[in-house]
Image (cartoon, rainbow, N blue to C red; front, side, top):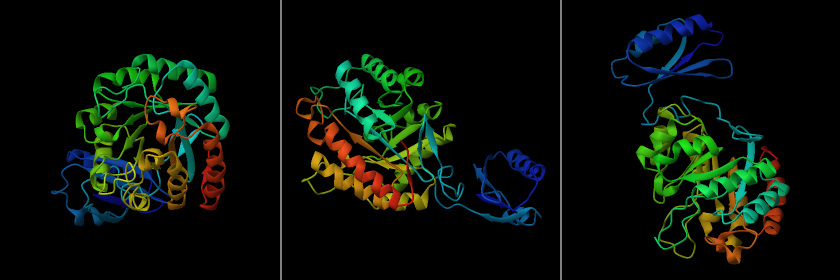
Length: 339
C-alpha cells in the first residue's frame, strides 16, 4: 500500500501517521519526493482501512500495490534510485561503465587490464575470483588469492572492484574486501544467499537468471531489499531462448520495462549476452540507446590465452574504441557518462 502525503505536510504529522501504521505491525518506508512525501506500507495490509486513511487532512491519496514486490516498486519510490560506488554513480541520469577480465589470472594481468580500462573511462573494475562453470573441470577462479590481486589492482588504480559471490559463507570476506558484490545469473534465486547479501552494507549487482521473468528478477531484488540493503543494481545479461547462434539473447525490452516497474538502476552485460567479441559493440550501443544506466564489459589483455570467456572479451584497444562511441551516444540520451 502507498500513502501519498499532501505537499507541505509537516514532519510531525508524517511521524504521527507512521507511528499509527507501525502499531498495526507494518513496516513503513519513507520516500521524500519532489514536493511530497510517500509512505510505503509493507506487511499484511488487508486489515488497513483505506477510507480512514483517506480522510486524514494531510493525505493526498492512498493506493494498493497489486504487484508482489514492494520496496523495489516504482510506486513506492517514483524517483530513480542512484547507487554510488566511489566516484561512480549509476542511475538518476548517471551512466557508469564496469570493465575487466572474466577472471583474475595473475597480478600482472589484472593490474594491466585495470590500468587500461581506467584510461578509457571505466569507473569500476570487474574480475572473477570465484567462477561458476558448467563443467567441474573448467577453471573456477583463484579464490581468495584472486580477491587479494583485485585489491592490488584497486591500490594501483583507485578503481572500486566488482566480483561475484558464490556462497553465504563468503559474505564476511566480501564485506571486508569488495566494493560491489555480484550475484550471478545462476544464483538469482538462491534465496539464502540473497538474504545474506541483503544484510551486507555493500551495493549488490543482481544479474537476471537465464530464463527468469521480469517479476521473478525484481522479486529477487526484493529479497535483498527486505533485509535492509536497498543499494541494488539490476543487470540484464541475456536470456536463454531457442536461438543457438549466440550465447544468449539480449532482451533490450527489459530496459524500458524494468524502468517502468522499478526505481532500481539497470545495467547491461553485452559480453555474456552475445558471447562473441564482435557482438559486444552493437549490443552495448543498443543498451545505451534503450536507456540503460551502465554497462559491464569483459576486457582481457590477451583474449586468445584467457582461461575463460576469451571469445567474448574485448582487447583494451577495442574497449577504448567502444568507449568513444558510448560517450557520444550517452550524451544524446541525456545522461552523463561518469569518468
